[in-house]
Length: 115
Length: 114
View 1 (cartoon, one colour):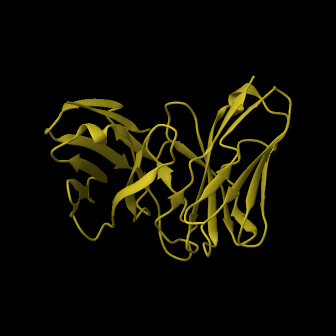
View 2 (tube, chains in turn brown, blue):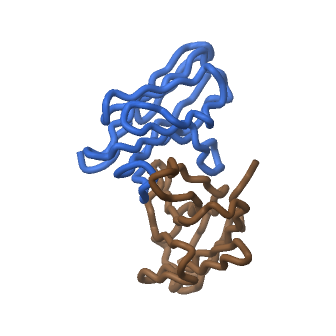
View 3 (tube, chains in turn yellow, brown):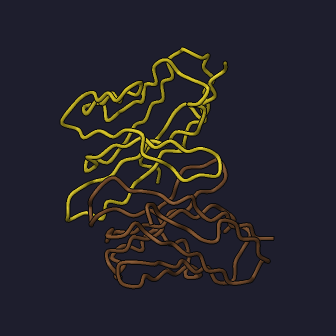
């Protein structure tokens, strides 16, 4: 049972453009929503994360927009660069000491930024 | 070490053989997770350790899969009688304590079953 749905599966953007990746979740117990970046042959690395008490979080060129009522969140990459070409995963988890913290991942989006 | 270390980085074995994959978490991290990543897909949770106990094994796909952890350090994931569908990248992650985020991932072991 897939609890986090991610789209699109792949994305091609021109250098300097905006990359947008979307995720939707089902479990209302989720309250931590990270985005991970993965380069070939490497493990996922945390890019940015958000809790549901805010609707937006920005770190540099990366922004998460969060819509709690719609159970959706998205990653925006501004001024996309060829070095941003990677696979991006959204994930979700309930947090707190009573939870295991295991992450439920989306299927991933392969981003290619053309020079 | 500074990060999560996994070994071997690559493993090729014949169908039916047993394999052991190793994970060294970040020092001081009590929570440890194993995930499986099939080609072109997202990560699937396998098992969670808090210290050396495994309160959540719900993601293990069959009884051929098992894992253990020594204290709050090294963990091994064992796959017995490997099948071709076990081919995947096996990733380990650790976090500071139960329920804490973020999780820090190793680079994984790429397992290929011939």
